[in-house]
Image (cartoon, rainbow, N blue to C red; front, side, top):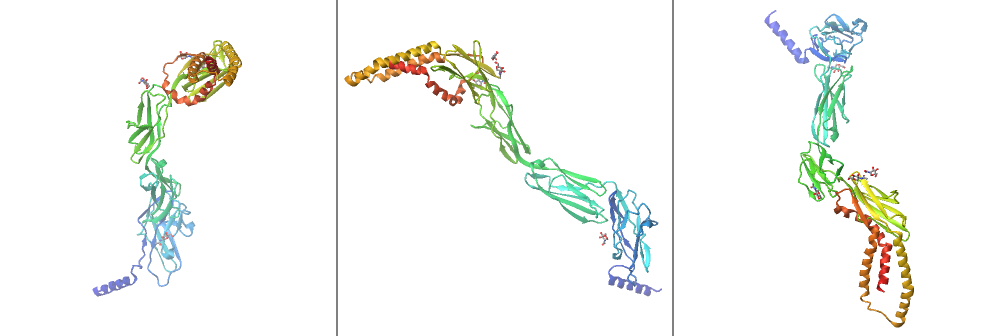
Length: 515
Ligand SMILES: *[C@@H]1O[C@H](CO)[C@@H](O)[C@H](O)[C@H]1NC(C)=O
Ligand SMILES: *[C@@H]1O[C@H](CO)[C@@H](O)[C@H](O)[C@H]1NC(C)=O
Ligand SMILES: *[C@@H]1O[C@H](CO)[C@@H](O)[C@H](O)[C@H]1NC(C)=O
Ligand SMILES: *[C@@H]1O[C@H](CO)[C@@H](O)[C@H](O)[C@H]1NC(C)=O
């Protein structure tokens, strides 16, 4: 064969290629050298084959897969396949389309291959593609998913996360689940060499509860294997739950340490303290109050971080102090009854009891108004000379003794009333008659002044015995300065005292004293 002939043949070959574009004339198969798959899952080996085009278009194909070159692992008649593979292999490619893709399900540890495809074309030819063999790298556990998420967000911001895994089993891709609620969307994408990528993306609005929590995506593979990846979220938020914390109750005069507690991310870097009069100088999380009194004001704190500043609600300390029996406590009487009232201010509110030297007396009425306890005793006139009011709470006790208006005094009262009646009947009425007839009389301008003075004098003289008291206090730390706070509470008691029968007597005295 001369050089010219060879050149001629080469040229013909080139023209042929130029016409058809690809070399379809050879027995070749296209498979990856190696595909990776997960034990227990499935695998699809991508495969395409070629053969020189026959003159008559072939209609019947038989595709066979071998392990090495002699053990049949797939045959359309499955009884021809070796037992180990008989029910695990399936030709998923369409041979008429020159697609020889093979599926193995489930994949066994030993399915490493190499595997060879063979095609038999009826009324034409047959070939094994021994040069294009494929091996399987079988793994016993999949790689962890690749998780991407913006880890640092401000509270309320949208967080979007995506999680992807690669796999070899397109008919049963891994199921991806999230530790956080949301609506995920799934995308599948084919990669090279028999690998597919499954991606789940999810968005959700970040909340405080998400801070410092792991966001986990889990991929569950066919066959039951699961793998997961996790990232911890850092959600920034301004202080919440800002509270002044400290002891709930404290003794008057003690010092107390209060703490500004809050939850924030990042942690609060400074604090402010306020009471109703304004800002205090402390800027730390703790505040020490020396010598608290019942007048110590409610206070609040403000916690500040990079995200904002938030005040607490005010805290009023519960200051405990021993009972103090108020000066308005007294016994008064009317014609038939004695009424004793004991007014006690203390925190916690006191137990208040009445007693005689002989023993305990049940109270008639008990009223509580915050720290003030008002206890009334009502008895028939003359039941006793003295009564005691005892008050105690956890901080101490106090006792006050009252002198009760007696029958003797009441006798004098009756006598006074009698005399008054006599004076009115015997002197005033005749005098009035005199005035009407003779215009007899004295200097009227002096009378009101004298009358007022006498009245005041007799009032204090006569009211003294009925309200006399001897206080025997066992406690020393009482603060009278705070008494004003309760004034309004026994305002009506003072009104009752205005109706004191002794004052009536005093006025009566003034009437007949002037005459
Ligand atoms: C071959 O068939 C498989 C299974 O049907 C399919 O996934 C793949 O895309 C096909 N390959 C080509 C090159 O068409
Ligand atoms: C506490 O305060 C009271 C009233 O303001 C005062 O009388 C007392 O001396 C103070 N005690 C101390 C230890 O500062
Ligand atoms: C007050 O005294 C009574 C007895 O007098 C006692 O039973 C009670 O427990 C005392 N209360 C307090 C708070 O100390
Ligand atoms: C009253 O208090 C004093 C001490 O403050 C105590 O010694 C006394 O026993 C108390 N009395 C009663 C009846 O509890």
